[in-house]
Image 1: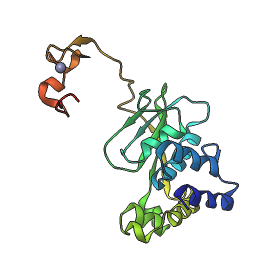
Image 2: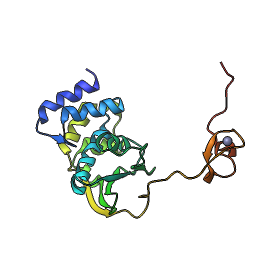
Image 3: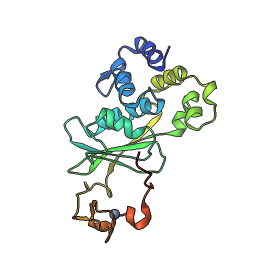
Length: 207
Ligand SMILES: [Zn+2]
């Protein structure tokens, strides 16, 4: 049985559970489709988005900020219209399991985080998040069951007002780099970032 099937066997147990407006089956399927497998962090993130969404209100156009690169960005991209590409989702590389949704006009919103004190009430969840148990000793099905049992119980949330990062980045002026001949934003300087030594590649021989 693959991870997907294992997760689906959980669905029958929780037929009345809806997350982000989806039945559990659709919820898991959306995660698997986008992320490739049903990662526990995204399942958890889905419940967080659901909670934040409820506080912000259904009719509000909300932007998102997540505080880790791991899993949470995908939860936001799956269950809200906010993506990295459209600029409505911003990612902080803090490795804190927290996210905020906020009204893009009033800047007021809600921050939801995994409350580690509350998570202690769900030892599998706590041990997984704190990396206290080797993966082989905590099967995915068991962890997913715990996450479903926990639902929102391991989160805390607070109303917030956004003070930074709410600006949607506008593209600045564009010029042609004299080093590589490619278009680049002039706010990088006289030549592009790659030609200034920030490049992440060297060119291989043509095949
Ligand atoms: Zn260049």
